[in-house]
Length: 208
Ligand SMILES: O=P(O)(O)OC[C@H]1O[C@H](OP(=O)(O)OP(=O)(O)O)[C@H](O)[C@@H]1O
Ligand SMILES: O=c1cc[nH]c(=O)[nH]1
Ligand SMILES: [Mg+2]
Image 1 (cartoon, rainbow, N blue to C red):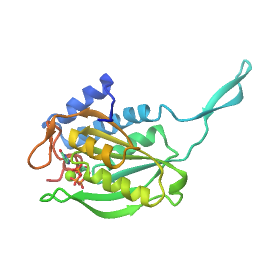
Image 2: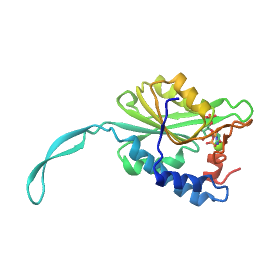
Image 3: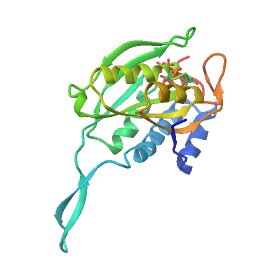
Image 4: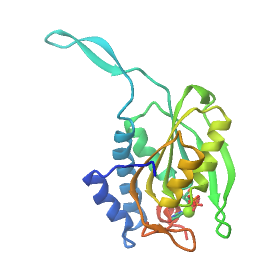
């Protein structure tokens, strides 16, 4: 199983609060955004740097700055929207694409309904974001879409993953690195992650 678990204490603490069924939508949204920002810190660890010369008030010195690699963030609607602002706080110049995919509650298969990406897809590295990686169907469908449009370098960031979803993404897209705050036990008979945190979209937006 190829997956990077980001087990920073701040993330683990906030994730526990998110899991709690008594946490309401307002707190849920705030915590999710905070975790997304902390996870983005880890995901961007290997961004390329170049040297430049800067004059401080004291002396000239060689310093490092980002090379300006083009990045794209792609939330999977709806629940992925809850992580966008946290990621953008760290990489504000990233372009945002939107992919609409929902999971058919009976078949658990992904149903695609929207796709709007930056025009220069083939020149960007992408981070696909969704709090939940359950069967993996929605993530695989989104990565398929991005690759069809020319994306070559994609990372997947999800808050909670099921082993089933990790295996599926590994199998269908072995080049895509998965980052998560937790690999949970399993899926239940309805395709929900156990223990998970319930339906992420409903908890973010207060729907049922
Ligand atoms: O790995 P999978 O088995 O595909 O399940 C995960 C998907 O299910 C949820 O979306 P949902 O279908 O509930 O749509 P929503 O975000 O609009 O509520 C979640 O946000 C993921 O996108
Ligand atoms: O546990 C799950 C599985 C799929 N989608 C969710 O929102 N939660
Ligand atoms: Mg949902």
